[in-house]
Image (cartoon, rainbow, N blue to C red):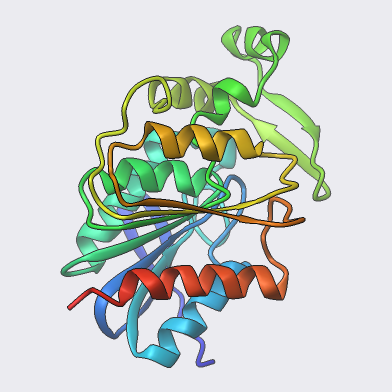
Length: 243
């Protein structure tokens, strides 16, 4: 796979890193998960897929993550949504196919209210609600920054500003007014985003064209070769009817 040169754009004075591949058809936009970046296994596999098919693709790092500038603790869901929207408006033309991983799936749901198609990978809408105990929510309400061991190594940081922003952008309490095709891919044994969240998301979506693909034994990262193959097949299925 040919590596795409790292480039930068500015959003409200924040330096946002991205990689953009030229091509035809709908532009695939990859939206990373919480504290993740655009160079993970799923993102690079999608980029190789786009290269093989001659498709356009955009991937980016939110401020404070990966190669972008800023402090992670200052990031909020609203800020990262703003950055994704700005990057799409500045760097793409025509229809889009949004691929959001975990928290990126939450951002993709918001973006898809204005865009033609969506694939959610272990999507985690509203995780600032169901992902925290009442005790942790109380600490966040007081403005505390949580620092907890991450199951993937290192430390998981949750700032009060991010949590508060997420609470304001919740989706699962009402109908999600999307009529575009939606494909949700979720691991059966996902311990970070319970499978029930995928079913709740599917039921909340207004679209009649929604499919949930549950991968037996799959965990949250969905980075095993057969899991990535399933993701690529799902993306390919949405590309077929596109002009």
